[in-house]
Length: 389
Image 1 (cartoon, rainbow, N blue to C red):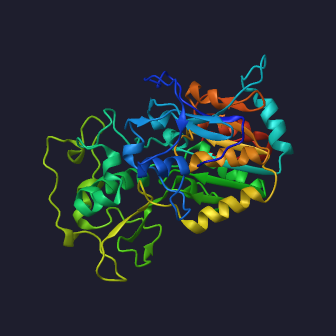
Image 2 (cartoon, rainbow, N blue to C red):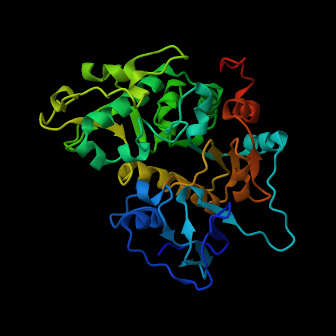
Image 3 (spheres, rainbow, N blue to C red):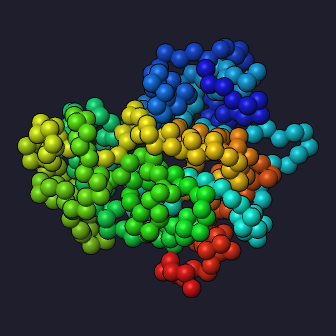
């Protein structure tokens, strides 16, 4: 059973509660996927990404609430991406967060330990496509169905084509002013740590100090052995990874569609022997070096992050371009708050402010425009190219 401070609850916005919830019952789950989400880990204690079934509309029979510091089930249907942390306000107290850039600058100038959690919104201004297409599909496939070990076992060529395309797009993209601003802040603030859910490598390419950057979900530019022999090929910039994946690395004019992305054009047939193989064990295929749904995060990295948070008071928790709704990343905000952190959210979605108290900050908009303004008092003025002037 997950235990929380009494003032925290899981909240479901947008009328996601669809069933009668008059009779609460103690939370018991028979769904492995749900248990992984709720407990942020398995019995081995390693945080895991929830499976696709537990994330996107799979009917789970609960709304979770904090009662006597434990969760109870309220017999409802929820959609997990809408699940987030919030706090109750005392009677008569407003929960509207602060929006003053000047107030935040003053706080940042006086802060010692700063933790940042970044998501896809940080890279939006770099032109990277989202994980899903406009219709939520990739060649009529739900992308989350391709991001699992089972999918790779069934059809490694299809999964590799999907990731080779994402990899090509990441290599074409350039870091934006948001990436550069975070990199400069990391250089200026000795006790700064950035946790990124992004796998595009743009933070590293912006010059973010590696000692102050943790890739929670791995990197598209890394390849590792699917047989888990221990081999990892880091920061491989080859595009494509192998000749057979060349269709995923083609460039077409903006007014034309890449054949690989057109579900009406037959997908290239690739033999398993044409895919990248592990040079170490000689028997396994190489796979993208990202964390797939149902897999655990790197154990040593998780320990390092938790140790950093526990080491002392966290003055500011930056949440940038992410709803922080997916475990285990969602838990870091709560941990930072337990260490005294004021939360500052940068997100174009106004609903992101619903999780905040009046002591927190919310800045609505593009991270590439807002972060240079927020950090100006520490890093200096940044021009349109990401250079400090």
